[in-house]
Image 1 (tube, rainbow, N blue to C red):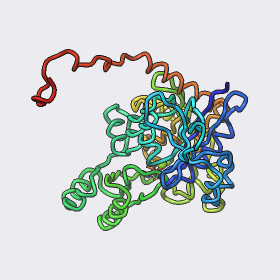
Image 2 (cartoon, rainbow, N blue to C red):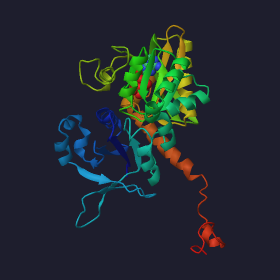
Image 3 (cartoon, protein in one colour):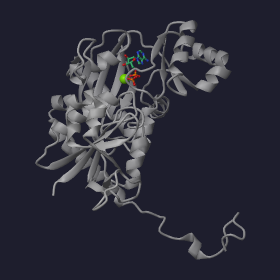
Image 4 (cartoon, rainbow, N blue to C red):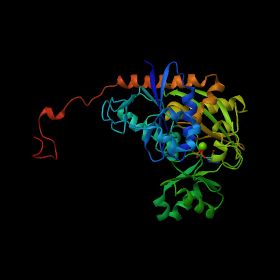
Amino acid sequence: MKTNIGVFFGGRSTEHEISVISASQAMHAINREKYDVTPIYISKQGKWYTGEALFDVANYRDVPALLAKCEEVYMRPIYDDYNLYKTKKSLFGSNVFTKLDVVIPVLHGSNGEDGIFEGVLESTGIPFAGCNTLSSANGMDKITMKMILQACDVPVVDYVWFTDKQWFSQREQLIAKLEEKIGYPVIVKPANLGSSVGIGRAIDRSQLIEKVDEAEKYSTRIIVEHMVEELQEINCSVLGDCDDFQPSVCEEPIKSGEILSYEDKYMGGTKGVKGMQASQKRIPAELPDDETKRIQFLACETFRVLSCHGVSRVDVIIDKTTRNIYVNEINTIPGSLSFYLWEATGLSFDKLMDKLVQLALKRKRESAMKTVSYDQNIFSLGGGVKGTKGKLK
Ligand SMILES: Nc1ncnc2c1ncn2[C@@H]1O[C@H](COP(=O)(O)OP(=O)(O)O)[C@@H](O)[C@H]1O
Ligand SMILES: [Mg+2]
């Protein structure tokens, strides 16, 4: 019997479509002599579907027609239950559509890359590739991530952060603090989105107010960062787990404006809508050796201190005036799973998928070796329980 890999994608995220493309690429790369693949598409409404038609990206032009050909399914958050169940009750026979062995989440952004979906997987105990709930959540939130990196001596740009409620109640104090700590120009970001959604730059107070009002539409948590005016952006992927990891070659994405936009990232400038390979990039990035090494080191440090797993991509910013390097963000489920960086490093896409499965199984073996200390029933030891007088004796 082949190992059955469940690939989850789509999801309730602004990066839904990108996830469909990444997952399609990943599913086609999996070695089918060794593995079976079960695609599980999460609709924008949050429902789960499976079916052969989900393999072909062209079918997503008409999602209702596509879903009509698919089976709605679910998993139960029950430990050790790896079954995918059909939502429609069958009159006869089993409700089980298939049993998964390993899961590879290829969900980008909210409800997928932020630990929410990973929590569902952890509840079942199924082996899965990629960050667990904790590291996904820490990596996704731009504020929490920067706090952890700072505490671990990984350089990040200066920033301040606040909630939308604070922005309404203490705007004057926040602006004063921000102007004193970082000054202008600044970049304003919602803390937990990707793909440059809700991000804006401000060169003075009135623009700042405008951009925070905009960012606040997307998130309750806002981060305002020192803007590196003359910047070079470099990305580096890391593969492994926090004990054993390696960096890929570096890439330099090419942008058309001040900020690397959604169009730059996914549509190859503003010309085609061809998915992520279409976006312009230089691989490997043309950098002096010592800078490449430093970026690879910082990418690995970011991966390690956040306790990441699987394949991540760490994006850094180089200040061209000082050549200082800052970690900007980590993408714990990167676009196209960064396969093009691994190909350039000498690891083919099918081997990358194989490695992800091996990492998933390794983590499962390791967690099975940890002591589980809730086997004892304290109620059986006798005695009372404080605060439950009369009820538990
Ligand atoms: N501190 C900064 N200084 C200058 N440009 C920045 C800064 N932070 C982000 N940018 C620009 O904005 C883009 C998007 O920001 P990023 O933090 O990567 O968010 P996202 O998660 O949406 O990709 C970056 O790729 C870069 O072009
Ligand atoms: Mg980015």
